[in-house]
Amino acid sequence: MFENDTDFLDQHFLIDEKVIDDFVRYACVNKDDHVVEIGPGKGNITKILLSKANKVTVIEKDDRLIPYLLELKKKYSNLEIIHGNVLDTFIPDCDKIITSLPYSIIEPFINKIIKCKFKTLTMIMGSNYIEEVMNKSNNKLSLLTNSFFNVEKLEDIGPNCFEPSPRTLSGIIKLSPLKLDKIKDKKMFIIRQLFFYRNMKIKNALKEAIISYEDCTQNIAKDKINKLNIEESILEEKMETISNSDLDKLVKYIERL
Image (cartoon, rainbow, N blue to C red; front, side, top):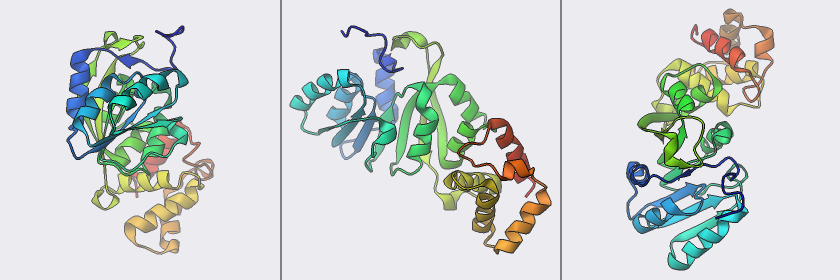
């Protein structure tokens, strides 16, 4: 055990064997899969994945946990270790991603994986986030998740299933990427495009999104935006930095398109 075994960079390690088995089962790993596990910790789940998958790539930030993974590497030739922060590290193309991330980095992580190539992501997350996503709340994290992924809630998890115990309830969800051409709902299509143009002023990003959806000219798109009478202060913002309250207003304007 480490000297500060209860403080691993906001990590909470899953220790309940039944939940671990459920977590892996939900991921539906098979012998042909390349699996990326983010935040493997001491490798409890990694060992199971290595016995089921063709290849397992783990991404771990904590220096103190790397020795555990190196010991696994001696036994399993299909293990690749990437030592780094997932937010700053290239996530290789893969079949499945499995992770139990620190809850504090969920938004930048979702922002990152919208550009990654994978089939499914099975993830343990705080119940507050899960409820907002399942209820399709008009906040940034919920809209981001729902506009890029099909979301399936799989199981609730109590705090006693982790060491150390988190302060909140958790759950297991599965995200499956949505292809842009499969999104027929205008609101979700436009919101998704706004996130793609997150560093562009909303007035310009919204114009590009309308053009993409309606295959219209720039002048027609501008006219549609002008007719919505969106507050100028919102149009001058960027999706990268917009507040949830202003985003809620923007979504209500978009619903009128």
